[in-house]
Length: 256
Image (cartoon, rainbow, N blue to C red; front, side, top):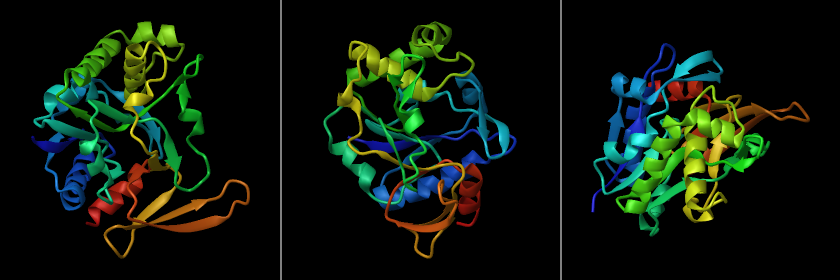
């Protein structure tokens, strides 16, 4: 049974996502021993749609709406789908291949700086429906997994309807919410905990500087505490990280 990782990398005017994907692929091979397939055809990005991502660089175009097609894009029997700003820094994700579930996704993000930055993202819409993080997803060729992707495709094609139903802005398509709604449909419009990855998504926000440490699995975080407004330098070793600061990620990738 084949195993591998799927990355989506569509460059825009400000960010070289393809270089980040190639850097990620090397780490995936080193720490997980898995091959990587990179989807980078801009035609595919346009098919998927465009989202305006207001990050540290301002309103850059973010081509990040093609994940509903991961089922057909993946050449593997078992697949991990990762954001290219997810730093594989251990063999932790390898555990997902041994869990007998057709699909898995993160429910919660853990703020590594312990500043609770992401609590507001636990739910979405006026009804506060439980949200997931499509930063990391796992699926196999079980038909139940295929059904989830078919639902996401349907939700995406009827985005305005679901925006009205769940009471959120219809302005942009969001993978996180689409997969949450799809699993909610399967679970009878309740939170289906069955599909949750059994640990939180370790994440650092856009205001956190990050640099490569002396060792390959070591990274240095720099940020300001909320209450004391104190500068903190934090060393992280052997921990996978979702890095939302794209500028910092670019510099790390360029230096390796």
